[in-house]
Length: 341
Image (tube, rainbow, N blue to C red; front, side, top):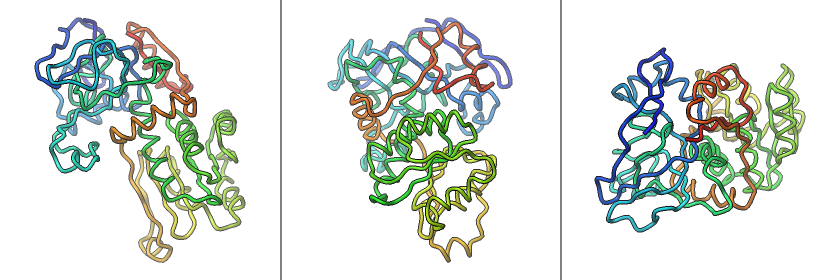
């Protein structure tokens, strides 16, 4: 089969022929890929940022946002059958460790991460586990929802976690309305009655956010912290969800927060510099967010089927993988880029 592989760091990906994955274990599921999301993490992989952390052996197939159709299943698989439309949770998990048994499978101690430390979905087929496949509604197409497997799931995890503490009348500031942030806004709108304020440097992104659920849009032009404080009566917001995490966003995010507020970090790239006396005197909470759980993905697919969460995509055939990578790297992608093998 055709597959796009990392052959070396600081080198271009290569399209090559590799063997088709086969069912070898009772809980294996082989999926024919209908859509594979192109993510900024893929750019970071090529830059070598994940080399030491993942320990992956090159060459290997990249791609960690995947959806498609079940192609083959192991003898013990009962939750899906051949032909089912599915989206794949990004991790292959064991189901036996404490985290998995607590429903917190994103912290599985024996997980594999297709596209990061094992073969991913920039290919015609991918092997995963019965624990990782979520059937999707017939009205949804794999290429339309593939990026919800990671970008959408990460946004949902953070927004749903924040929504559990938000009450009617509260304010939630969303920093960044791009690929993840525009999903987060829709999730917040579906799950909470809190007032949503979106901050972004791009005026077009702010306008988009206002059409999909944001109550207020603020362009990050240097006066945005003051604008948010003004919108919140000078107190700051009960919750800030930062989908950027660099370029001064962490400084601004903390400054927009009220006493005893929650600052959710999703994007990454810089350090958070907050004097400890400020943390204890205001009792603010700094909360990290990784990708979501299997149950989070199931819930997100319900919202997608109901039309409450939609994803803007730009699609590319597999042999145009370099165009997708270049467009993402140069800021030409609105929403998410999707490869369609």
